Length: 215
Image (cartoon, rainbow, N blue to C red; front, side, top):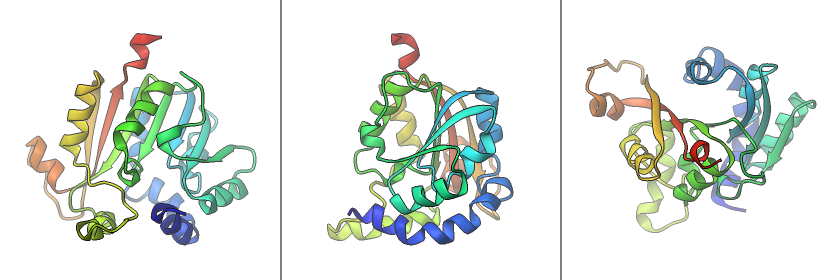
């Protein structure tokens, strides 16, 4: 079992208790309205679905599938929403055919991969549209990456910055459709893109992937 799986199996019960409020009132409350500006329905993959809160909130407008590396998270998601589809898996090897979805939603999940470029390749293989929320530089969960400095295996697989995601997307030929910043408490927006990203809790990006041009 990887460190990421272990951490999220341990956190699953606590996360599930807080998830609904997080999506409706907390740090993720702006994510689904941002998504709905891009697309109002269709086949959606929630990559890193946790207890399935987003999938439940998006039903019935979207036909959702949730995927998570933690089998305990998936067990809870299935228990909460037995009528929906939840799968244990990783973003590096999505168990779906080409163009299986209209959109991928990846909220604070890309950071947990040690092969983020491979995850982006898989995303563009399965959908023409993706909405990604990436943690800001000072977001507390990034502390889980610290021990990498000692050469140890860590739960958070990479420390990708928002500007790095934008650069990777550009190099892959993706088109940036929209972006937004979810500010940390007490932060003040400056209007300067990099400064606002630097003290954000997370940054939202919507991309058209190359899939739409290759179909």
